[in-house]
Structures are given as C-alpha cells and as structure tokens.
Image (cartoon, rainbow, N blue to C red; front, side):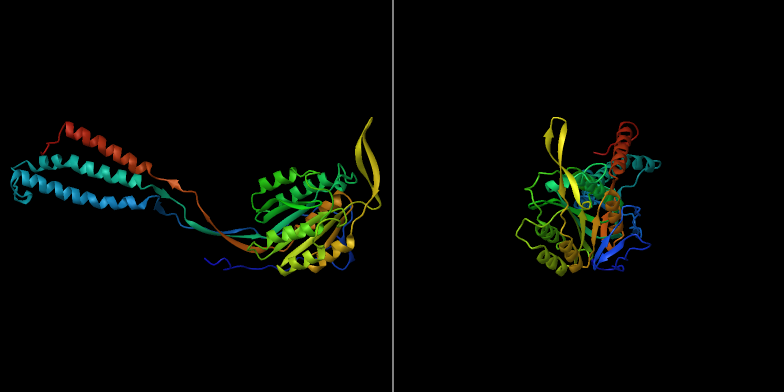
Length: 379
C-alpha cells in the first residue's frame, strides 16, 4: 500500500479569533493573562475494518496431511498381502457388513485424530486481518529550556519549569494520534524522547525534567538543530517544533537563524514561546536560616530572535507572562492544522488450536472404547 494514498492535507492554521490574541508584530502574538483554554479541534479517525480470516502460524505442517491417504493405502495393501487376496475380492457373509464397518472404525478414528493434531500443531488462529486506519495527526517536537533561570518563581503556583512541564503534559494529553518527541536544552541540547506515540513514556519524561541535568546556559540554535534533525526523518507532511525558553541565546555553536533556515527547508514550522513576566522575577539563590534566599533578576528574553525564527519557518511567536497565558498559548497551538496519516494495524490473533486438539482427544477416546468393546481387530 502506498503511504501517500488517500492523503488529504488540511488548510493552514487560522489566526486568533475573537480577541484570543493580540498582534504584537509580524509573525508575533501576545496573549493576555485572562484568556481561556480552548480545546483542540479536528476530525476523528476513520477505520476500514478488515475481514476475519483463518490463518496458520506453521502452515508447512499441513503438508503432512497428504501422508494420511498414503498410509491408509499402504495399510490396505499390507492387509491384502497378508490375507493372500485383494480386498475387492472379499465377499462378506450375510450380516457381516456392519461388523466389518465397525472393525474399520478405530483405524478411521485414529486417522482423524492424527489429522486433527496436525492441524492443531500448525497453529490455527482467527483474526489478524489488515485494517487501514486513517487518523489526523502531525509530528511535533517539544523543546523545553531547563536552564537555571527557569527556576524563577513568577508563575503561580510554583516556578517556570514546573508550570511549563505540567502545561506540556496537558498538551500531550489533548493530542490523540500525533507523533511527539521531547528535547531538553540549556547550554547544550539532548533528546529525551524520540518522536513517538507512546504518550505515557513522554509524560514520564516531562515529569522527570530537572534543572541541572545539562550544562547551564541557553543554546537555542542547538535545540532547534537537534529537533529538526529528528523531524526531518519522519514521513509526515506536517512537522512542528514548539520551543519554550526564558532567555537569550548564549551557548552552542549553531546560530538560531541558520538552524531555522535549515528547518524551513525540511518543511518544519517553529512556534516559539518566550516565558517570563515583565520587569524582574524572583530567583532562588540558595538556602538561608529562614529557608530559601531569593534575588530579583531582570527578565531577559530575546523576543526579536524568537520572532525571526518563527517567521522564517511560517510559525508564530508567543509571549507567556503567567500561567494562564502559557495555557492559552498551548491551546492556540493545539489548534494547528492536521494532516491525514495512514497506518496498517493488525487485530490480535485468537488462537484456535484448542478445537482440533480437543477433537483429536475425543476421537482417541472413542477409538479406545471401540477397540476394547465392539471392534473386531484385523491383523
């Protein structure tokens, strides 16, 4: 099946409506703190069901069934040779026809038992029919800043990193058929989760993000390059990077604009989010006699760079100044255009070997009973 068959590409994402966001500049949107979270749109999946079918795990074993008629013929020849006459020349006495039939019944049952056991050994199973599933989805990489400044406590009820993690988890839960990956960055970038549909693993990785897991700093260009390298290998038509940071690019050897240009050549759209209040924000600097010590530091976000990176790739820049505005931004991104993807799934096989196995055992029991009671044994 061609992967591209029946693929429909949706229209580009619509701009903010009803005052959900205010334009700040070209390719840049500022969202206010009172905006409400809005759910994701998109059509549900359509499934083309495959027909139920019987198949075998070891079909070559069925070839041995052909040996049963040969065994029956050879047995008849042996009996004829021992009796010195052909079986066709035998004329049973009056009333002996029924007895001759009973005499042959154990051998017939034995043959049926062997045939049933061969079928059981071949591994019959029901189901497993191919079904084409069409679902709406895109490929997304979340790039989350884990530099020390993300500990700033200007986002209720905690700090920037905790709110960013929880909002990203809520975003993942709102998706259904998208392929999503995770890149953490500070002074360098590291892929935490490759692009996957295993959302529980992704949520666990988001929960596990910690400040200090990477060298401190903000390497925006390296983060974009790492995410783009993951996305360029995917086959989907729609590819998106969501980059969340609260700082200025001050680490790494990759220029963010150069990385954005490279991403654009792969058809990757970048949504950038600047995280931080206006003015100054309290940052914990260590433990004191009465608990944590704080220092107010200026919020420095390179909004011009983030705006350029988004505009170069057809994305948008957002500024989140508090928890509610960050949630609204992810809700806005959640309304991204979606492209139809196709995949082939297989039904779980229902093993059916028990039926021929049981029939074989039943036939064996009947043969034993007949041989011990009614059957006349023929040497």
